[in-house]
Amino acid sequence: MMPYSGKDLARSFRTVRKNTIHIANDIPENQWTFRASPNTRSIGELLAHIAAVTHYPRHIHIIDKRTELSGPDFGPYLAAGAAYEHTLTSRAAILQALEATGEEFAKDLEAQTDADLATVVRFAPPIQPPSKTRFELLLGVKEHEMHHRGQLMLLQRMIGVVPHLTREREARMRPQPTR
Image (cartoon, rainbow, N blue to C red; front, side):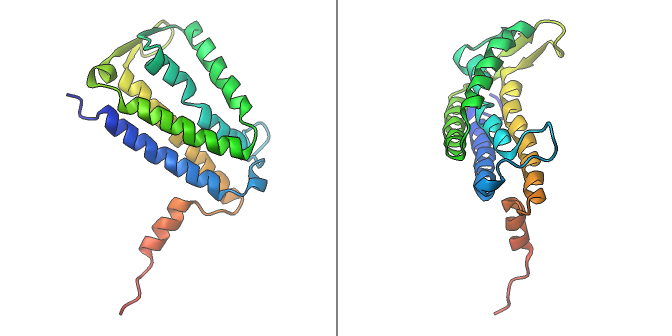
């Protein structure tokens, strides 16, 4: 038995996505075009990317259940994900997609059996390492979102918004009035 089940993976992914959605809601709509520097994603573009990032791993690992991949195999999956990402052009569409794609992916994760998660996916050269378990690859989706969420938290600071996790931690640390 795997020490970390599909249900565990789904629960932790839902927590990550909930925090991403909280950040998205905390950023005023008029700041969604802000970008830290030229040639970087704006806040809105970054959130659209996060909303769409489950697309290709979902198709590779959940729908198609691929066990072998070469470099060219990734192209159609990435293109389909990018095409979906580019349809997310309004704040409302991005927020709706964050909710919908997050829950859809979490449900897919919940349904993964120990055998599904232990499946080895092999890669053609020059991809290294030459194989990973499906668990590691699906966990990577959460790690990718957390990477971008760190960027969003920095962008929040740049536009004068204190991230909600910081506000919550500061509230817990404040001395409580004595009675």
